Structures are given as structure tokens and as C-alpha cells.
Length: 106
Image (spheres, rainbow, N blue to C red):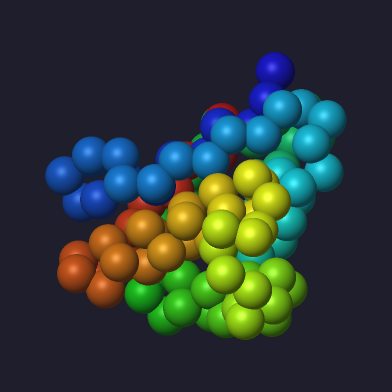
């Protein structure tokens, strides 16, 4: 069991991926940054998906930057902080190009 969170473009191609073990408290941070707590099912995601707009992903990035102190270089962040930031950045890039990104919470 664990949290496998994937972001996909309009063509269905995976553009972002984050993986957390079922006991990793950092999983809820990503759910929270995406305002997607309803997809958190404890030891994994609910298996559902949601569409996020560019604006929603931009808000998630702003919240991420506040939480993790954006002045800290990524190479000094811990593994989970990097994967959370990378996930949001990759989804944001796709949403900017295509208008939205679909995120799966498994």
C-alpha cells in the first residue's frame, strides 16, 4: 500500500509522479497543497482523479513555496520536498500549456 499520485496531460501521458509509502506523513502535504484531501484514504489514495486548472496549480506552487521556504536551493531540500515541488512544477507547466492537468490519486 502507498500513495501513487500521477499528473497527466490531455493526451493521457504522465507528466508528473509522486510516490509515498503508506506511513509517510508527507503524502498528506501534497494532498493539502492541491486542496485534495478528499482523495486521501489513509494508506493510499481513493483511486479517483480530478482536473486542476493553471490557477489551481499556481496556488499550489505558491503554498508549496511558503511551506518549504523558496529561498532554499532544491539540492538542499529533502527527498519528499523535492518530489512534491517537482510534481507541482510539472503539473503547472502542463496546465499552462493545455489549460489543465488531470491528477490521479491511487
